[in-house]
Image (cartoon, rainbow, N blue to C red; front, side, top):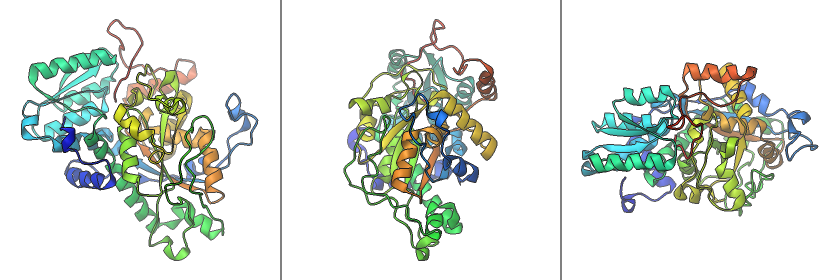
Length: 444
């Protein structure tokens, strides 16, 4: 990978520079809204839904939420990863590219690097664990990459990568653990800001600010909005950001939309969330991470609770792009309360329910990893209480990142067929070399 001494600093201006550099290689993906999902998110959960949770017996929260969905499932290769891969290759020298590039990934970064390399006429070697979905393997091979299979533990994958480097001299391009990857992924936040601003300029009623102003109700949020409450939002935050919920005067509504109150993004290895947090650091927008909780996949949330990074994750969550832990670099960003306001987690059934809503109500195809942010807003009572308490009756405008849409028809059918009594594991081939169903630190 590019020498760290040559990397731009992790700040918004560097994300802006990265965006200019990769524009020829990426799509500006659309931002969609959905009134049905706004209404669902703004309706209190049934008390029975809170039974067995830390919120049992409490009055269900009644937040006001308007969504803006950044649809990276419409991105090239079907996921956001092309942003980081494209920028990473742009930063490599001709000498570093001469012998090709190599990475390890279960799918989306694999496809992204394969396409980015093909675009630049560079050889790509992709180490994919046997847990990878068949559709992602086929797509990676379709972009012309040399796919090498490995076991699913970090030791197995890294050993194969080292062998490829020794054999070919290829340059490693990691899935998330590098400043160039982080800066590339953060470019989606710049687009989201500008697109929401234009959407609200055209139709002010899309924003809670318009509704709250018309009703004479504010949605002011105190500067300690990042404090939150509940077990999934453990870190207090110094009041370093500007007030994220100030009500907009009617004279300004159509001409200048100030900012989203919050952005929810999936959290796996942390490259995307770190990039978004870096891009939005100078703004009042609050950034939150969303994870699956199945079999300890919520290493980010648990790490924040414990005050230390969790180095290993062994999970077969259906959100297969989020089966990897944070790296020391991404942890340093996600654990900084000035940059990331908190991390929440949802279970497998909530992920599937969110997917179904997106399919049926928005007519949009997304993979399980993509909807964890929406699931948090709909069902994590800690987040919902935060919005109600800090947003007041005016509520929050919330950006939600749909990170990708790489899910095969067979896997999709099997996922929902399992609702009739089958398990919740995603049937995606053999996990271990001996057929054992275990996976560790699998990068998406």
